[in-house]
Length: 278
Image (cartoon, rainbow, N blue to C red; front, top):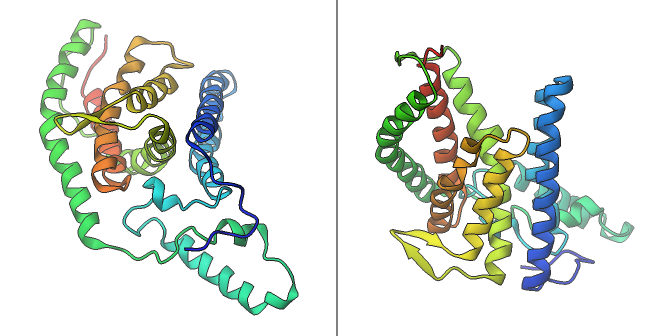
């Protein structure tokens, strides 16, 4: 696989981790400031769309500007997510070949020269990832619901009455594609892969990776939820992040983590809808 013309030198482990941590620090500032801004002026959809865009496009830019393939960072769904980009890439590459005598390829063509190369949907791995995410959900959700009930009671929630929100499907889709996908691309795809080069993971407990890399990425993930809200419960995502990491590492794709992450958020919303707060 050839690298794009004029690509920057390949990152060493330390400089790559530093670049990823700087991006994470900028993201934390955006999250904290964005939540304060939403309370002050509203426009939450616009602000959080910008933040989601940062989590998707900044990692892709930082990866591709060094001539690396996003697929090597697990930023694919066994070919599925790369389909439209791969089609665009083919058009640009073919156009560049036709115009080869007319000058240099565009910067966009250079950035896309590796992204989606040879992308083709692989149904078997995709189905396995989806099945594993569903299996873990069936295993984890019942005890989580019990713990969630006692947590709500400790904070004075009213009686629980099961109720399916009218917007449950929309909530699920939003949490999968607008929340889980950007977060998994940034934290488990980009950040963990960069840190892993510096601090490789060598210990697994029940298939859960335990290392400085996973602990730091999970802590930054939890801190992003905490900033701007400052409630101890918002640090809770620290622990599920280890499961998201395990799912990504198992398959080499963020697919399972995205689906399980989004389903977990939607399930939490379903539980919250059943409480009648005083």
